[in-house]
Picture 1 (cartoon, rainbow over the protein chains, first blue to last red):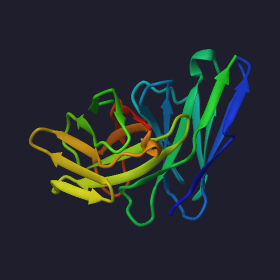
Picture 2 (picture 1 turned 90 degrees about the vertical axis):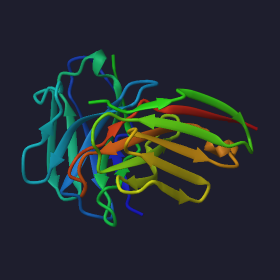
Picture 3 (picture 1 turned 120 degrees about the vertical axis):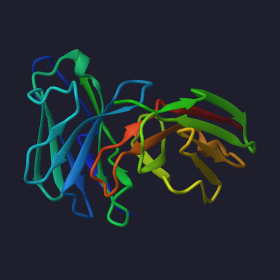
Picture 4 (picture 1 turned 60 degrees about the horizontal axis):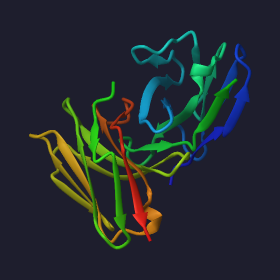
Length: 116
Length: 113
């Protein structure tokens, strides 16, 4: 099956620093990837759609200048949390549509961000 | 925006029993999917049902979809301890992977050995 990886799996940073999270499709190409965030004991919320070769589209209420998305290649999307604050602490998960069925999303294992 | 609502929010049953989770949504959909998430991990796709389908089976899983009521149910038969996880329904507005998914709040399922 399609595999999506994320790096790092967890990160702790100081308030005010920037953190980059990578999402890679390992055995397939993805012109589109999605970024979600999940607070403890809550559901996933779509943050933005990452598009290879064009700008990302952000969901309402998500600050594009704070959450920078770059879809560098057909297998890599990055999410950079700029000037992180404790309220940005969350579980960030990416996904990509599968090869066989584009309607099925394959999710990465997630990145746990803790901002001190 | 969050549109799915699952119930119950938490469910604890004995191993071997059947577990039923329900999901409601608000807008028109192209498909509805169910995912499993083990604690602190990524999501695993379980099953997808399209808007023109009413029921679908996959192993011990049975999913129903009622578009008139905007609701779906997930039945896990003969539950096992390894089924302990959170289960989410998710809806897609358009096909072809063009849109991200809208997730329900999830049901936390605990299977007692």
